[in-house]
Length: 305
Image 1 (cartoon, rainbow, N blue to C red):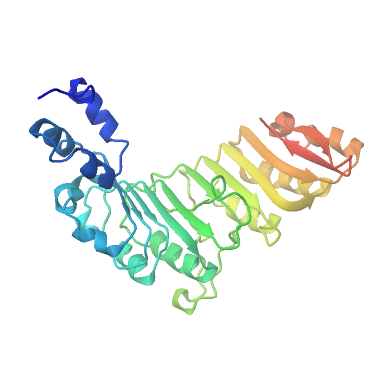
Image 2 (image 1 turned 180 degrees about the vertical axis):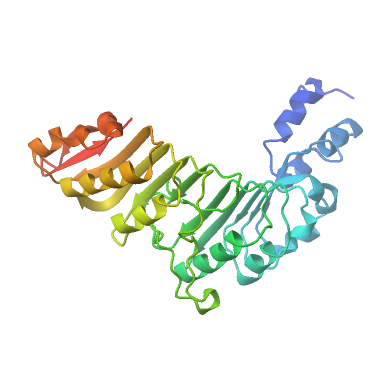
């Protein structure tokens, strides 16, 4: 039998190609073609799976590969038995249901570093966030993402939210209320982030402001709990800031973040040229801020590169 050019590739190259494929494609394309490809496919320990339907759990490939799946994306809202996936590093629930949310808080994910939820209501996202913050199911978690239903900013850039894992180093917020008070009776109006808890591991914090918040007071409250931040970025959408806003922000950063060495921004402001020239004097980290006139000089874009 004549070998294809693909089969002339060494095992390591084929294995590398397989790591870019979803399990469905991997199984349909390579499995059962010959013993060599079977061995290569089954030796892949970094598999990804996208569940579009709960019925896919009955597919023939499922039992072969579940223990090697490190990335699971679930596009339906039906119940998932997460115990079938002991090696998960990445879990994405695009249509999270109550059953799925309850299950992730019951099962321990020892290797999970990335947990991501599709769009949920503010009430539901706060409830599940509270559970995540107060359970010990995610000892390795580094990123927890919520797609907030009121977030009008690009969800690809400003969608990561707080996790209380000691392994976490970077947090990105979107339009979530930083005071994090809950109106949900299940949480008894507790603060999700207590002022008594200092999150000393966090080194970087990115936030995007929208019309409904967060306010400077809320940012001040949050930054009080993250004293070791070294990098801070603020962006906004649909808001025009004043010089007074920057003055107050600079004062908060000076009081709360004594280790800060990098400030980044993407803001639209309304201020005079004289005020613009004084921005770099407000805080030592503001010296990287650049500007350009927008909309015929009606406002000023402040940005860093």
